[in-house]
Length: 552
Ligand SMILES: *[C@@H]1O[C@H](CO)[C@@H](O)[C@H](O)[C@H]1NC(C)=O
Ligand SMILES: *[C@@H]1O[C@H](CO)[C@@H](O)[C@H](O)[C@H]1NC(C)=O
Ligand SMILES: *[C@@H]1O[C@H](CO)[C@@H](O)[C@H](O)[C@H]1NC(C)=O
Ligand SMILES: *[C@@H]1O[C@H](CO)[C@@H](O)[C@H](O)[C@H]1NC(C)=O
Ligand SMILES: *[C@@H]1O[C@H](CO)[C@@H](O)[C@H](O)[C@H]1NC(C)=O
Ligand SMILES: *[C@@H]1O[C@H](CO)[C@@H](O)[C@H](O)[C@H]1NC(C)=O
Image 1 (spheres, helix red, strand yellow):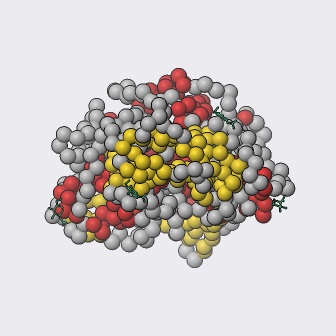
Image 2 (tube, rainbow, N blue to C red):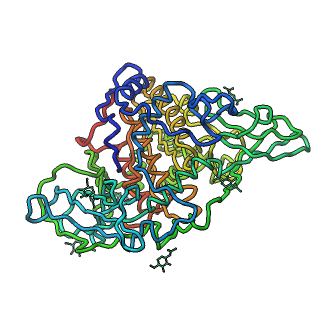
């Protein structure tokens, strides 16, 4: 949304040379500010980037120069305008207030009536609680155009002019009435707090492992990084991927006695004043009123340039990339998945797809692997139609209930064990559990997955790989400090940039939830899940003559 144009990877094309190298070269080519580098978070990073060797070994920073370079380019992709510094005794009155802010629909370019295919521009003015216009940018806004009668909706793109004014741009995609909705997700001052949290308290979500040998049991805290001497730590860094993971050494037991992993908890540590920046109904996910009319009437006309990846009409997602999205009932799903193996890897947002499919297909029977529903792994089989469907959680950090360490698998390692082929579908969804960590942690994970996807597509090019993007969700204070849409947006941009040019298809969960009339939810409601699965199945089983996948 904000300034994505600064990542210049649009025309990437990967043929037979090493894709990672291509990406790497491309990134070198697009570096603009190679000196621009914000220091990595406190005790988490520094080390290898700032060359301060006296600090404890940094186990969270990027080590190789190649990865530092990639990081620099992605920093451009997730650039966010500077947000106000907060004094310890700031006044809420000086911060952005949706109730005093307004949006205005701008007249059509060239005058006349609005037509399908036109771009609608809306100007947004953000003011503080006294109604004084803000002079700097960085507020987090989302915009949507919709019509409830038609069950129609499309996401808008917001541009930040860095002076307190913003524009939202929409594609007009249906005839009739279209109503603008602009939401202040977070005031810029709240973004300052979220940034500070990631820098100063990247371990605010912590984890635990249970150790046991004979009758002796111990529990210690674990995380991607722990600020302690090597002698005090058990190092569970994955040998293949290099993904780091540490626990404090138990007092009595050996590191090898670790048997389970679980979410530990959340330490909330912000001031009462800062907390006021995250009030539902006041300044968190609150609609901004229109200064004049909030809707336009759209007349029919051939389509022009489009701003969205799709929109809803009659409640059904209409993709704009050429995919003809079909409606799959259980018979059609069965037909489509006949003879196929579907591996789903990731967090609970793709586990929802597993659950949807097992519910929709009476023939697809779950085989009880004696694992918990939440953590998986899960497996379902349809013997008659030869369908195998599995779900496996991604590796740590994962905030699930207790799971055996034997089941903590990294997606990249799993992908290396997939034979692949035209009857194999791989679905990946990994984002939500990374939101409290520095973005580097997520980038490293995605680069590992990307390399494994490229290896898979090299040995079995007909394999279809589908990635689910991040999505906006409901926000309470706890949810915000751990999982704000602002964190998700950064991760979403990184995901799109890293997989650009790889032969994978995206299911754009971000826009599919933003455009829909149902509330934003981490786990969207079944109407939206159905639409997502319809997109997934339309990729797998396109109707003859529609969009063809490039299998080069
Ligand atoms: C904020 O503004 C209101 C109304 O203008 C005023 O009553 C209140 O004292 C102000 N609060 C602060 C901390 O300045
Ligand atoms: C803010 O910047 C935009 C783009 O440069 C400009 O069009 C607009 O007039 C500016 N608004 C204010 C209030 O300065
Ligand atoms: C949707 O558009 C139709 C046609 O213009 C209009 O009659 C209807 O009132 C609109 N619905 C809403 C909720 O705006
Ligand atoms: C942890 O183990 C990995 C792999 O064995 C090694 O590369 C890394 O240096 C170790 N880190 C620490 C802090 O001991
Ligand atoms: C709260 O966070 C600050 C840094 O923002 C840190 O100095 C302090 O130790 C933290 N307090 C607790 C109880 O974690
Ligand atoms: C599924 O849809 C097809 C046509 O679209 C229809 O013929 C069939 O009866 C439907 N099956 C079920 C179970 O609804």
